[in-house]
Length: 324
Image 1 (spheres, rainbow, N blue to C red):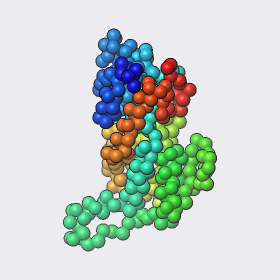
Image 2: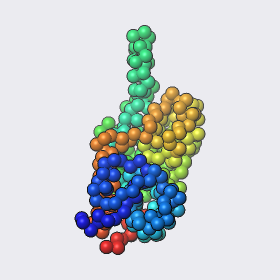
Image 3: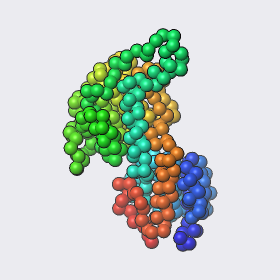
Image 4: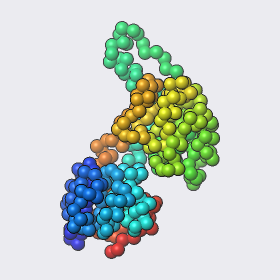
């Protein structure tokens, strides 16, 4: 790989140190806290041919690097990167799918059980000494028994969640922008239709203009008073004000959330909902999985300059080819 040693790579944001180490072993690396073009001396901007990013990379920053060839994003979701603009400029964008699929699916099931059986509240009850002073924790209204589960977004993670739901003996149906080949789950033509057919909705949808606040008051109402809503996808897909109101009014029973629209700022209205299990975006946050993600970020850059191809290109840039 001696021919790539002189390539300059810009590491943006708080990228996993394992990824940084691998990049430093192969390239000339410069670190930047965020994608701010004004922080780059004009003479340096032309040197960078790659970005390894944990954070936003907008069109203006892409335009500020005239010789940029690839943006390797840390995470399966890449809504913080303007991939559409990158594709038009002939810049490859990659993400880190597959390596986090099972971990995120596990977290979704944990949230579902927490929301349904109130496990965090039961643990707090024990820790507060109430088991001894007040007796057994009250029987939970919620149970997984007899539930019908709908999945919004039947991609890799959605399929992994569906397999787990099947193991519980529960029926699975889904809404996606199109039918998924090779699956037997019942397909619904709209999110509202899906919500009306199930009592448990798990969102794995990406954050796009088309999915913005897709889970709204009408969808939550269709889910019903026994409804459980879990979001492991993106916070932007949910009308958080409507969700808080639905939880407080009993429009749905409970929710389990790992993602929010303006992280790390969680709406006070949701914090006040005792029937919501809230996590600080930890879906893939194990050492094992984050290291695997870091490896894939580095490998995308190494492969691009070493072999002339990306390992995991995103859909908007699959047409982009290397100049090698």
